[in-house]
Image (tube, rainbow, N blue to C red; front, top):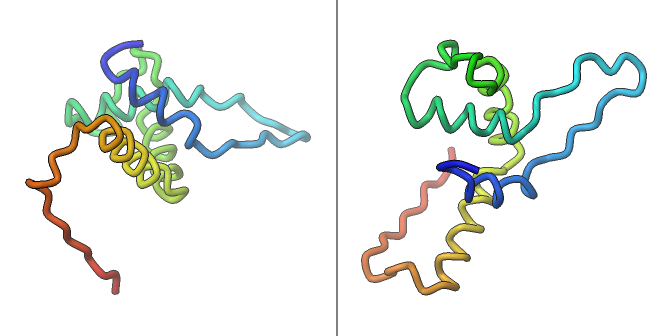
Length: 107
C-alpha cells in the first residue's frame, strides 16, 4: 500500500460519499485513494498543485486540490486527527507531559 497506507485505511471511512447523477452522469470520478496519494505527494514534496505529474496516475493537480478542499469543508481532516489521537492514546503512545493546550477562538 505504500508509505502512507495507514493514512488511507483510516481516512477512507471518513470520506463523504459522492452520488453520481442518474441523468448525464459525466465522467466517473477518480478513485479517492489515488487522489489522496496525489494530495500526499504534493504536500510531501512541496511541489505546486499544477505540477503534479499525471504519469503517476493520481489525476491532475486541480482534481487533487478540489478534493482536498471538499474534504476540508466536510471536516474529514479534523475527524482523522481525533481518530489518530484516540488510537495513540489507547495504545499509550502519547506523552501528555509534553503537550501544550491552546485554543484559538474564531472571530
